[in-house]
Image (cartoon, rainbow, N blue to C red; front, side, top):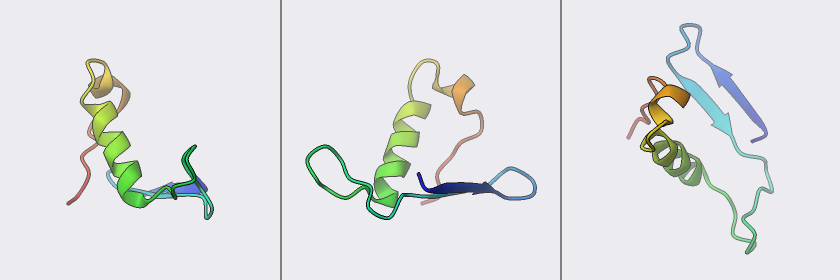
Length: 58
């Protein structure tokens, strides 16, 4: 991530991927990839305690 910021009430976060962020195969990292990763982590057994209240907007 190049940056992340929270709303004043800490209920909304904005993540900004680094401009040239890439996966190991050279594919660019997108905002959708970040959302997928957060949802996946949230769905793990300990995800709820690691990311309380995280729900991506569709």
